[in-house]
Image (tube, rainbow, N blue to C red; front, top):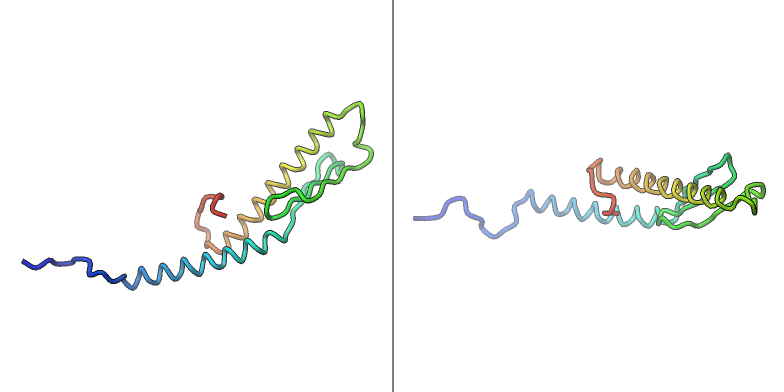
Length: 115
């Protein structure tokens, strides 16, 4: 008896199209990642006392402190403000990356670690 409906060894047309789409999406994502590496986002806390700037690569590139926030008797407050500003800037960088990549993936809910 002959087999019916078996796999003939060739890649079906839909699979070829899917692979081409995936390759194009990957190339666009790589271009977007390079572009994001040149962009920055910032966060300001403490009423402007501390400003942190983070790159699209999620690296701290600048920290700015207003002179009035530097109080030798209250170092803990300054440390807390710096941590808050950096964390907020990192969240802003994540949002920027997710928004940019969402334009490429068409809203696919891919894990953040994919970028």
